Length: 347
Image (cartoon, rainbow, N blue to C red):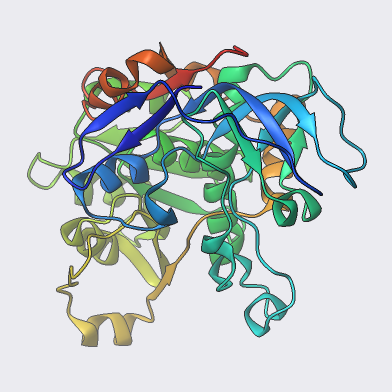
């Protein structure tokens, strides 16, 4: 079968002769329909993120191809989304509710990754509910957005969205756009965003976001927040990209007692240059969030099915597995694409 692989220099290739996965006891194999290209996939190729053992693709949907001995409640041919990571649910970290920070979480993964014609879901993932049957109304393309939307929902649950909240999302890439739409769906009174790419600002405003600005325009971000909050600052400022300057801006525009969500992936070794005394005196919280959980993915799925959350319009490009290298290049050009999805044989 075909699998997308990458080398230490970040070069992608399609391996046409990888062995087909086999479902062992408690395991499931899935025939790929589609898998979204995530910002962390791009960071892996740039050398900024070495998690997941070098595997690419963690937003896959497909049809169950085979079921191993001992698996109950699933059937061959079923349309499913598969979550690549699951917590152990037994350690002290899990007992505190910090499931995505469980030491086991990042070690669990689908094999050989989401950019493969077929992949194997390990028994621990199957047992902990990582396979979510898709409602017939949820398209393959929409299904690839359940995981990144789940990450945004997990973040919102972690930081706590106050009633009648004002929210500013700094960085309207695909997951920033999802975060903004979810904040609106959860009841935020005002949601704004900053983004350099006009295509993505337009996607934000089309999705019901109140206002967006290009952060390269001098004073634009501060003026946007001033107009929206009467000078108080936003309740929640979301750094949807890990660049330190973005996090610093988020800390500057949040209100007294407000929250900065460190949501985007920072580069290794990056440092935050902020006035710590000002953070202290203004009571600003900086809360990191990472990844998502099965219940939050299921909640996103429910909201999509109920018509409370629209995702389908964010997928702007679909490319077959053979063209994965070109698809990755396109995903890294924000002026040309919002969300790029790689399709497989079950599409």
